[in-house]
Length: 180
Image (cartoon, rainbow, N blue to C red; front, side):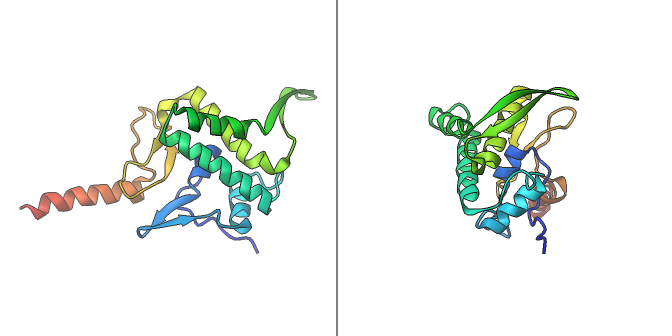
C-alpha cells in the first residue's frame, strides 16, 4: 500500500523539500522522517525512489543532510553550517558522461545511502548559484516551511497564500476590527 504525502507543501526544489519534511499542524511540530516509511514517501514524492532505497542507513544519512541544510538556511555563511553541508557533499561526486544524447553528468556515491541527502545538498548549491535571495522561510510566525520564490517580482512571503497568507490577513483584519 502506498502512503500519500501528508505535508502541506510539496513540489519545492529537493533541498527545500527535504527541510519541509518538518512542518507545523495545529501548533504541533510534525516530522515525515521519523521512520523508513516516511523516507519512502519523501523519496517517491521527489522521484528518487527508483535510485535509492528507503532503509535505516539511508534515513540516518538523509537526516544528517537535513540537519546540515537546516543549519545553513538558518545561518547563511556560518562556517560550521557550511562545513556540515560540505561534509555531506563529500559523500558523492559528479562524473561527466558522453552518451547518444550528448554530454551529461552522473552522480556517483561510494555509499548509495548518502544519495538522497547528497542530492538535496547539491540542489541547494544550484539554488545558491541561481538566486540565493529567493530562498525563503514562510513569513507566518507559526510556520517553519521553506520555499524558492519563483514569483515574477520576487516578493512571495508565504509558503501558501491559501494557508499562511490567509491566516496572516485574517489576523490583521481581526486586529483592525477588534479596535473599532
